[in-house]
Length: 200
Image 1 (cartoon, rainbow, N blue to C red):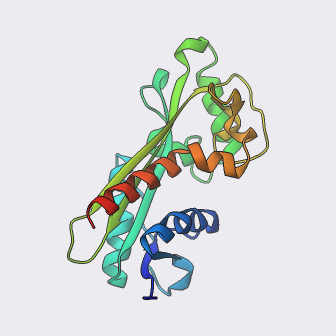
Image 2 (image 1 turned 120 degrees about the vertical axis):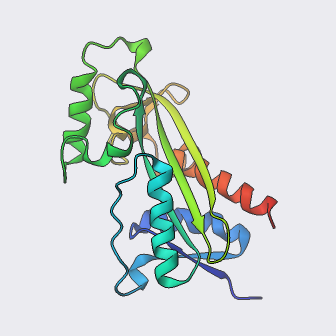
């Protein structure tokens, strides 16, 4: 057996690393968290799009370590708000805001918006950067509706107010296994995998 190809994941989130490695196993790759490296520069996510932020993370890490790297960025787009909070999802109600503060602000802004206009999606963009190669970018999304009040205790971020009509549940009511089958990150990972396999 040949050694798996090592790819640095621009994250310290153990859950994300686990998700990536399930998919990377199909390619014979192994994803490594940033925790395994000293002195890696912090990447400021100041791009206007998810793609810009994902690419910036991957390029910075890949260049610093001279290894393949994957960066991701994701967030919530609400149609009635013109696509906000978008790239500002994590800090919607201010820097270092709690998840609850963010979704409470969102519900406040949508207070008078009728059900049929509360459509939204979680979007994720992944960027794979390898030294000497063109970047590979893949995106995924998960469609839903913003509820009027929170429900469920699983997940994080906006999951308690993101209703999935097909599942008839909030994202925060799904098990992690269920979420990993339909989530925006899972879709983006599958699309990345498909692109990489077709280029082999």
